[in-house]
Amino acid sequence: MAPSKEEETTLSLPQKRYYRQRAHSNPIADHCFDYPAHPDDVQWKDLYPEYDAYNPPKKVEFADIGCGYGGFLVTLGEMFPDRLAIGMEIRVKVSDYVMDRIKALRSLHPGKYNNIACIRTNAMKYLPNYFVKHQLDKMFFLYPDPHFKKAKHKWRIINQALLSEYAYVLRKGGLVYTMTDVEDLHKWIVKHMEEHPLFERVSADEEANDPITPKLYQSSEEGAKVVRNKGSHFLAIFRRL
Image (cartoon, rainbow, N blue to C red; front, side, top):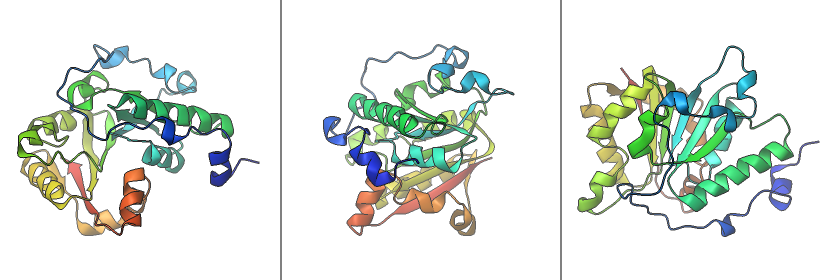
């Protein structure tokens, strides 16, 4: 019998207290990264144990940008067992935690969680190095760093220049999910997304009926903290035209 969530915690899942790192990271700085020169150079088989067994071959279709400690990435793996999802995280200790967490989950639940993986990278710089044109079906930007100071707004993960890169890797009809507890950032995101010619905001009914929407509120550690503190959530979903 597979262990329960509570039993997992007391067995062999990594403990976050050993992987703590400051919340803010400068995405413009020259961090030390290894990254592929072209998407064809990505060794996906090293990330997904069953990758070579897929017939026909599968491609990664979901990308959780700034996946944090991987709570929502794990949820994606459970919701969509036949789809491949990748978490991309810039902070070294946090990405190490997610990788160790996935490894432990695979050990605790044989045959599960082989469809999720995490890489340490800077998505603001290297996203097109990992994905070919129109590869992704869904992208997630959940509780991104708000970079409150005006001088640091250029560090925000949603901006006009980067949206063209997101449109490049998303298929037509693909979705971008955004959520934050900072109203100013939410307004920034909506403004920039709606001004871009390749994105439109989905209707409130479509947002409400999307099976992923309820999972966005507490699946991530940041989202759960907002719920505990009775804070506000600001959700916006956009379609790639």
